[in-house]
Structure formats: C-alpha cells, structure tokens
Image 1 (cartoon, helix red, strand yellow):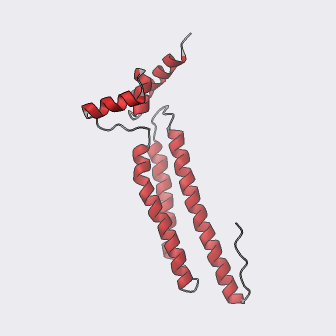
Image 2 (cartoon, one colour; image 1 turned 90 degrees about the vertical axis):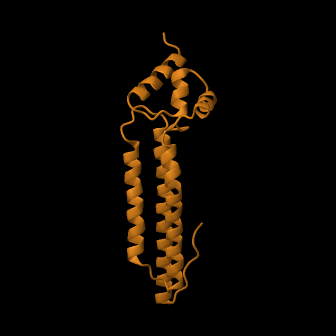
Length: 162
C-alpha cells in the first residue's frame, strides 16, 4: 500500500512530466522537501521561471489591467453623471470587449497543464474578479438608467437598495 507521501510525489512528478510549470509547491511535493527549502535553494542558485503557484505570473500581470478597467467603468459613470446621464456606447463596448478578451486569455492560460491542483484556484480567482467587475458595470448602468428616467419624468428616483 502506498503512503500519502508517495502518492503526492508520484502525482507531482507526473504533473512535471506532462508539462506543468515547475512551481515551488510541485517541486516540494516531488522531492519531499518543504516549499521554503525549495525557495531558498532556488534563490541561492538563481533558478529562473519558478513561482509559488501555477498561475501566479498570470494573476500578477492581470491584476493591474482589471484595476484599470474598474477605474474606467467608474470614470464612464462619473462622466455620464456630469454630462446629464448620457453614456458613450463606444466606451462601454470597449470595456466589455476588454473583459471578454481577459476571460479568453484566462481560459487559454489554463492550457493543458495536466493535474496542477492550483489551476482551479486561479480560475476561480479570475472568475470572481471578472464577475465583480461585470456586476459593477451592471450596477452603474442601472443607476444611470434610473437617474435618466427620473430626470425625464420628473419623478424622483428611489434610493438604491443596499
């Protein structure tokens, strides 16, 4: 009967053999050493292309882009409020196209990496961020639509539900 440690090592070796990126976690599992020991060794010897988890590089690169998209959505909303409730459809379409592109990149980045256990977490993180961004766009559009309707009809808008 194989011990849990043996199974973990075998799974880590298989992941590496099937093309998974050599993360510190996978290398630690494959060697039976701690993640910290592998990180120290990598730093001491100057290893390249190794990260803590699969998808770390992608998440680090995508975070500032998503933050800028959220800023853009808020800017569009503020601008629309100042200009009497009109939203530039081209700007909104541009933001939505960028969100779709990020989703496709996130799907592609997952690739066919084999049994990398952290890929699911990376996908869930990205899905959460994109869902929040999309929700914020919908909320801002709804608020703007309510404001525009209130201005046209002369009926005061209802306060937003929290």
